[in-house]
Image (tube, rainbow, N blue to C red):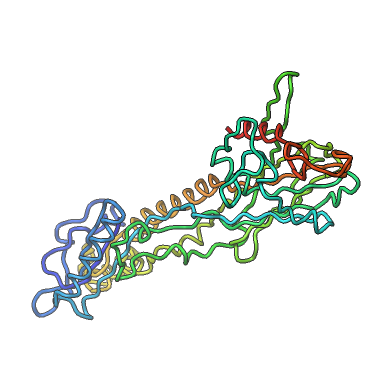
Length: 407
């Protein structure tokens, strides 16, 4: 929706006067008089053009209308015109959210967590396209799962030294969305007259943002013949969120986790999934800046001024408009535009931002596994390609359970 107001010279009568403040009745025909006119009988009065429809279509139509007004030669500095466009604002997902994982286990070798997936799970191709350790079927793992496992950082710990047990995993990511306006939805709209306040100019306070996390771990269950895996909420003593904050620029998120490595069972991998949500609760005074409505108040007729002006005239019973102080203004305009349309639109924008930002989830995954010293698995110090624990973080069966849970 949009509106263009033109204050120009008119002739005739004004038939949009408010009801009488004295009687509460519709004013008489004689009340529609205008005393202050120029030599040609003209008086100052606004004309309003309302545009409604698709946000891009309305913006395009208003651009064309304003361009025509500027090029017509009919208006000059004595006949000002104003425009107000109610841009739609929303939230859009960004292509990448840049999730990274950093470990602080007190051991540099542990913290690197750089085991290639080809050495972790059978059936995973390496950079050359070959499979170092084949699966029992001889087939490669589905590409989707290969990409996922290649992106999961995995820490291998040794039983004799479990490392730090508090604040030992840090997740960093960016805000997973961006605020958008009508101009972002149509490449053909240039907005020459700056009718749209860009969404990037919306100044939100740090307290408007809140970060929440949901933590799940992959749990294994065996009935003696088959092992299944599913995501469950872990015991708070095993994995918990120490803090979830956003930086001063309100762009980067920092989540610190506690993983008690002392509780990990040897040779049983722990795969952790953390869902991160960043929601925004904008305040009304902040989103008020999206619409420039100052000129609306300037063109709104003050009923107090209207009655005072009428009372000063010799015709005590009439309430006709006499001067440009009242003829060039419209009663209840601010109530309609500012308290009506603009306020409801701003409330809708706030609700959209609140509800939509809560739906965007960033997911981080990482793994930990505790192993014994290598000699425990191979007394002669030599390894075979079929050995499950040849430097792997997960065994073949572990990998099968993980893949089953992800399907």
